[in-house]
Image 1: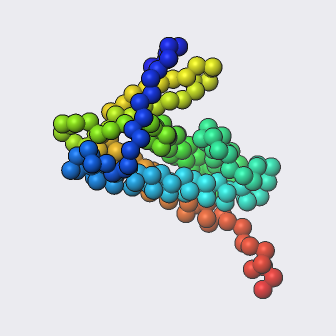
Image 2: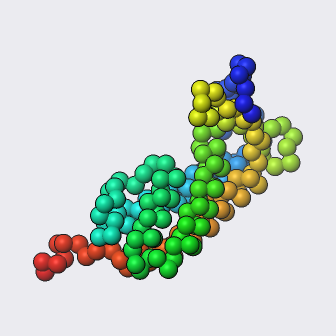
Image 3: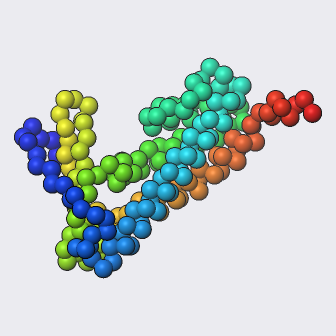
Length: 187
């Protein structure tokens, strides 16, 4: 939702958990925590692979620091799979995987940066209304409200775990190409 009118931001400034939380709130909190860890693992997996790729001779001209932006990560990933002969046959699948990760990043960013309200009273499953506030590239701010359910969190968690597992195929390929450390060459 794009708005040029002032938007009221309600703040839930109390302890978590809170005495008003539903009896099954712990399931929501647990899923949110698992999701945070799963995404941290997936991002670490991606960064580890990009770091390994930057040490390959074909990537000598690439930056040694993996980029922060996901589009730039995709560019580096694609460059490596295009330049390294042993990886070239896997370019299409590698790009599809990284694009799938990028598609899921919006959900990860939302749950990581949401302004969480309180649990929705009487909901059929633990659910919290949350507000997303972000700059839209112009001088305007986008504000969006979403009801986040336990089912939604579990779906995003499953996607992060699946993508992390799928990344393993490429990790094996990349690690086979890893240069021998110089210290081991002297022995």
